Each structure stands twice: as structure tokens, then as C-alpha cells.
Amino acid sequence: MKRSLAALTMALVTILIGLIFAAVPLHGQQAGRAAGKRWTAPRTPDGQPDIQGRYTHEGFGTGKEDRPAVLCPDVGKGGNTCYENSWLAEPKGKLSVKLPMDVIDPSDGRLPLQPWAAQKKEEYKRNQEEPRKLEYVDTQTRCLHSGVPRSNWSIGYVGYEITQGPGYVAIYTEYNHEYRFIPVDGRPHIGSNVRLFGGDSVGRWEGETLVVDTTNIAVPRATGFGMLDMQGSLYSDALRVTERFTPVDADTIAIEVTLDDPKVYTKPWKTAGAFVRGPKTYQVFEYACHEGNVGMENLSFRIPRKK
Amino acid sequence: MRQVLTGFAIASASVAVTLTFATGGEGVRAQSRATPAQSRPATSSAGFPRTPDGKPNLTGVWQAVNAAAWDIQDHSGSTDVPAGIGVVEGNEIPYLPAAAARKQQNYESRDKLDPETKCYLPGVPRATYMPYPFQIVQAAQHVAIGYEYAHAARRVYLDGSKHPEALDFWMGDSRGHWDGDTLVVDVSNFNGKTWFDRAGNFASETLHVVERYTPMSPNHLLYEATIEDPKVFSRPWKMSMPLYRRMESRPRILEYSCVAYLEEETFGRAVK
Image 1 (cartoon, rainbow over the protein chains, first blue to last red):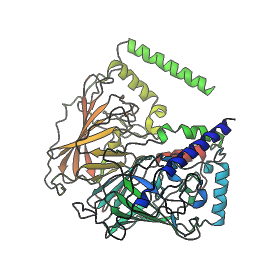
Image 2: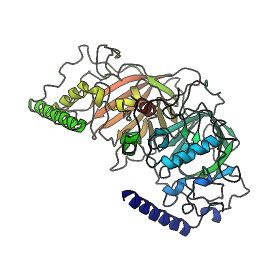
Image 3: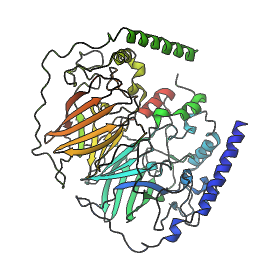
Image 4: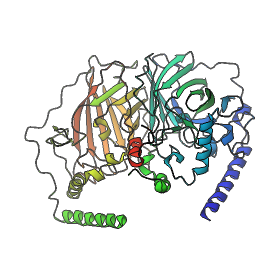
């Protein structure tokens, strides 16, 4: 009974959000200002393109198959509402240019999962409501690192703050208070035995684009895999991530993410989205996830504990 | 059954606290440092790296090297606890009587009550002197601080903005300004759940911390924190310690992913 009530509420909320999205004209359609023209960002004192500020994210699909149609009415039309953004009643920023916002490679928008990983994903979806194994609980519900690249499309209602100091780009993800201190001084990666949930990121500026290469990725040992979304799309410790952050106007950073994980996917794939500058008054704060994690307490009682 | 027991424990603890209150705070630590109060160490910003706008550039990886994480006051060594000369000026923490009793109780039940044992965010100033480094990236209007422990983080705004109203945080809310070559950070909006160390020293939600980061030498900062909390202390008090620049070539903080380790302890390992 409780379940069906919850389902009904979800359905109503879903329809409501769908209506809101349908009513709001898509930013991308009004755009095109910068099409063909390259924006040149101001420079920081040490000569980096200055992308500092507070942002929210838009876009970043993790596979067409996971998006309820109502939540993503514009999928396939180049729009920018999609599954992860269903948290937002309305976008906090606004896009002035049209950008890809989805899985952009492969072109069918579906994740090139290896058969076993596709099976795991189905298993996850079947079990996530009443998980009897920890692996059926999303890593975000468990308050683990979002890590790289998921921190780029962290839960929708929190933001980012970028700070640049000499030789560094620091990206703060409000959700679960994750800092990435990305050196842009040409250093090599650390030794491969040091594993980090946030990975080891090294960056370089290629003209106006910050290219960040991330390796040394750790996965939670209690389950053996990391998760890219709330739908059981997995990643392994073999994941290598290349992110390209390009400011395309004063308020928008276009982001393209390549994921290469030979243990889980049949080939590298790409997703795209953007950081969109928040209004002047927008602030990011502390999202202390673990400290108040009632969700996990409620979910995990069926999951066997270590003896 | 366990709940009943816990309830009983809480009830008993309350009785104990009430009794201690009634005795007029015999828990107050009476002894103070036998030696005269430490004088402030010499500081010099000569040779300290600077930003293009002429401020000391704190960008780098820093770490305290002392035993304050275990106890901010003078203490002898014991199993897994290194001895330490305290970081509190004059060594005495001016607890109000009820708070002194609570501190004692915290100490006795520290294995269960210390927020660190639950992987909670450590608060300020505790994050500074835990046995892990932290990293700073400094821009003109904003100082980003990330701690290796539990990826705790702070953003210090230097833009003249004020603390938000009616919001509280584990790490507090930090707003800073420059006083000559000293970065002064006003930290407020605490949630009252954090401790100062593993010895049970604590504060409430009325905690107010003023931190001062002053260059001592090209590779050292003097860290001073004035602690004010009218619900817990009878007067403001101060701690100070040097912070050491990590001198490895290209240092970086790594991770102490407490929550992930806790999960592994609770549910076991799926992979080796």
C-alpha cells in the first residue's frame, strides 16, 4: 500500500516536472550567439584562462535506455533536459549557446556495456528498491565519493565552485564536499599503486581548453565497482577519464568527458554537458552526506553485515 | 533490547551530568602550565612566496607536526597516543562547570562519542592539526582549502561577504580578510557537534573561531586560533602552532576515505 502511494506520488511529480519543462522554452533554441565564434576568457594572474566562479551543471547523459520519457521530453532533439537533471524544477543558470548534452559517442546514445555489465545493470535495477546486497545501493546513497567523472553530474540541486591559483585549478563539488586540486604544471601521474576515489588528475591548458587526464581511480572494496549514475552503470579501477573543459562564453563551460574502461565497456565512450554560472547571489555550501545518512540506515537493514 | 539499554545509558549519563552540575564543577581542570606562558614565536614574511597582488601566497600543501590531534593540552604518552606539549596558550581551557563535566564524560567515552570514530567532518580548528596534510589554492577573492581527512573542505571568501544567517555547518562558515601579511579567517555558523581532539574537548553551536595564518619563514606558517563559545567557556582562549610546508617536489594531498573504510568494516570486502 505504502509502495503504491509512493509510486502514485512519483508519477504525479514526474508529470508535473514534465509539464514545467514543456512550458519552459529551451535555452539552446534561443542560442547560437557564439556559434562559430570562439570565446576568449580573461586571464588569471598566472596566465590561465579564468574560469573561476560558482556553477551548476546541465546535461551529461549516461545512456538513453535509462531515461523515463516524460522526464526527458526533448531527448533526440538536442535538448538539454535529461535524467540527472530531473532533480531541478528549473535550471539555476541559463545557457546562451547550444551545446551537446548527452552521450555523444556512440551516436545511438547507448552505453557500450560488456554483456556481463549490462546484465549487472539490469540486476541492479530489479533490486534497487529493496536491496539485499550492498551492490544494489548507489554509491551516492552510501555517501561515498562521487569521484571522477561522476562529480561533474553529481545530484542536480547542488553546485560547483572553481578557484584558480598559480599552477592549479581547484574544483569544489558541493555535493559530499569533494575538492579536486588539478595541477596544470605538467607533472606526471603518481604511482599506480596509490588508488584514490577522486583519482589522480593532471591538467593542461590547450589554448582555451582545460584538458584533464585522470587515472589511479579507486572503487569501493565492499562492492568492487564504482557507479556512474543512479541506474547501476558501473566502472572499474581500470577507468581512465579525459575531460575537456572549454569556456564558450562568460557564463558557460562546455564539458566533454571520455571514459575508457576496458573492464566494463567494449570501447571508450563520450558524454557531454556544461557548467553554467549561477546568479550573482548564488552560493555553494557544505553538503555533509554521511553525517546524516538516514537513507542508508533505512535501506541497509536487510543487507548482511560482516561476521 | 539494545535501544532500551541505550536509553538507560543516556538516562544514567544525564543523571551523572546533573550531579556534576550540582557539585559546582569540580571537573574544572585546575592545574595550569608550570612554565611561564609561551611567548609568541618570531614571524617573518621575508622570502615567503607572494601572489601578483602582493599578498602572501598560501597555495601549497601544509601540515601540523604535533600531538594536538590526540589532546590539545599537555599530555603524557600512552598506547597509540604520542605525548604532547599542548597547543593551548597557558594550557588551561576555561570550561564552565557543566561543560567541564561533559568534557570529562566525553573523555571517558571517547571511543564511542568522538565524531572522528564515526567519520564525521572534523570541524575547525580540529581539521588543521589532524595527522593528515591539507592543501590550499589561493585566489584574490577566495581561498580553497581541502583536507586529506574525509575530504573535508572549506571555502574562505575574501570578498567582504558576511556569514549567512540561520545556516549551520560541520566545518562552519569562513569569511576572511588580510591584516597586513596575516590571513584572518572568521569562522562561525557551527552545528555544535564537533570536538577539538580525541580527548573530548568540545564546543557548542555558539562556537566562534578567529584563525590567523601568518608567514613565519618561507616554508612555515604560524597558525593561531582564538576560541569563543559562551555556552561552554567562561572566556575566549587561544591555541597556536606552526604549520609546515610539505617539501616533497610537487606535493599533493591523497585521501583518507573514512566513509569507504567504515563501509568495508561493516559489510566486508567483495574484492581483495
